[in-house]
Image (cartoon, rainbow, N blue to C red):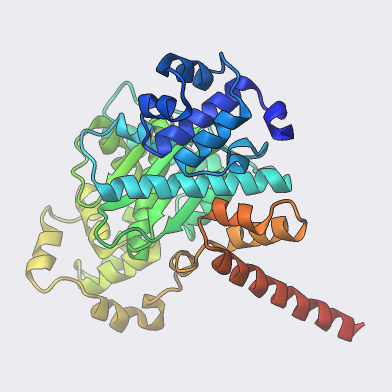
Length: 396
């Protein structure tokens, strides 16, 4: 088999180890399945002993993957689950599910890029670290630094997702997680694939904006530490207090946010619901995040948000009355998350199929889709291309 000869024993062993860990199979069980001792299996996974093709075929069957997926030269083999587990005292099935989804998205994204020869552009500033000083103050300072480095100025960020994906080159995925999942976002960094962020697309847009900014803080401060952000997290650790502070300051810089507030208050004379709705919309954040940031900056009294909550809150209906149609902004990320795979992934899959670089079976396995689901995606893009070609011919 050509692919077997193209890969080093160390690389094949690494891929087999990752496949075993993803399948949650112990070394003893895997060794017994192919009729070798555990030390021999360890030698295979370390690349000290070359694996035989019959052993690869048996192990692939045992791990629930194809031999082709194990040996494809362009394939990306990484397993995030152990990496996240090492840093978490507790986990539930929904967290593991989210990490596995994240892992699958990254693998498919990078392999399709590799097959197509796409060179992703990374624009990473140096990792800053946060070993010294107050974590909250560091978060504020580093958020300002990154804004300056990106040339964003001090005003509202119109589209933080574009800043993350195109300005920094971070891989960003927005997908729906289980309805019972408490995961808001995941961040990881790997030397082979770069920095990656997953956002829970079940959450409303302002919440995802805040989560994206928080995870960008982890990227800037301590990118080699994977992170799971959950609902109602208390941000007790130093890293979390830093990322939370960074996230707020990146979206709402103290100077410009404070000035925007003062300009509105000069008109209203006090902190009204309408003022909060307008200010939150201007910066693309939730009304709660807006008021809590004002409290943090000393621009309103502590407990202002609690007062609003105890007196009817600031509702979506009230926001619609103030903003009209602007209250329901188009949410491209959520719309893309409702697709089986993202628009970008669909286009890459179609290009790979069209150029006969991978078969439908290989694409189905890589994208975790049935052959029928994949065929529907390909046929839709094929039809669109045919209509475009017919139009161009007609106009000549």
